[in-house]
Image (cartoon, rainbow, N blue to C red; front, side, top):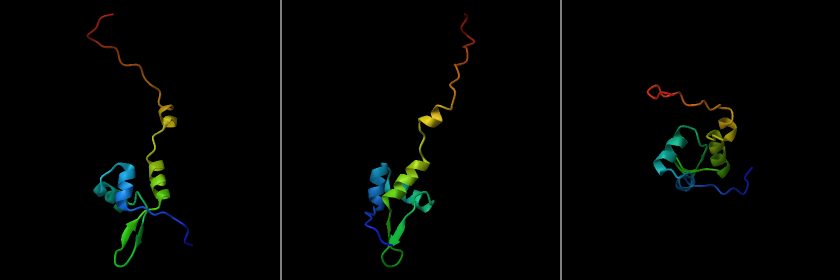
Amino acid sequence: MISNRNLLTVKEVAGLLRLSVSETYKLIKAGDISHFRVGPGRGSIRIDPQAVDDFLDTRSVGNHVASRIQKQPPPPLKHLKR
């Protein structure tokens, strides 16, 4: 079923992620960002904005992770006497 999607180009996704176009192509090739090929031959790559959101969700490092990490006090400095 075709919905009213505003598919993005690789260049647009690179701009959104603040990456180079070549780095964005690497993410696509690695399968990290799902995409469509439209047009004749190999076609042009188009990316659903939801695929960009999904990619960012997999890369998220939020407070929920940081809160589970207990901060250790720094080790005492051996060269200083107390």
